[in-house]
Length: 126
Image (cartoon, rainbow, N blue to C red):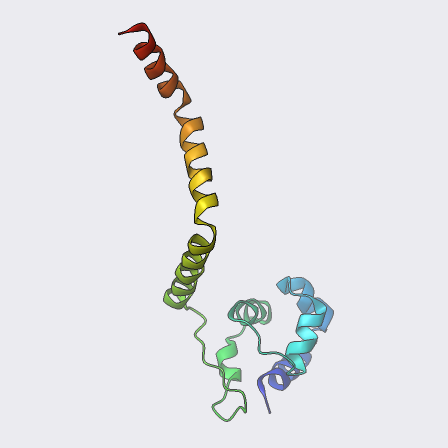
């Protein structure tokens, strides 16, 4: 029995419908269906919110005998941070010019009065 099948069995034992689980987790009904039918591997976020909605630790549902093994920890703060940093690096590499222009614009808008005063002092010779 794979992850999705065990999830479905547990959900039905609690008398939850897929629609109710969808509403409690914020995941779409189709996503719940695809997870339970083993069409997709759920993301860590999906596993976390489903576990919270069902008030259980879903890591017990994952067995090493699964044909599609899952390796996760529901408190992956370091892994999440690494993924965030990798995404941030990619964003900066692809959009560094836009980020630079936005940062410069923010600096100019927040320092407008100081810049104006400096220009006026230079203009009047103070």
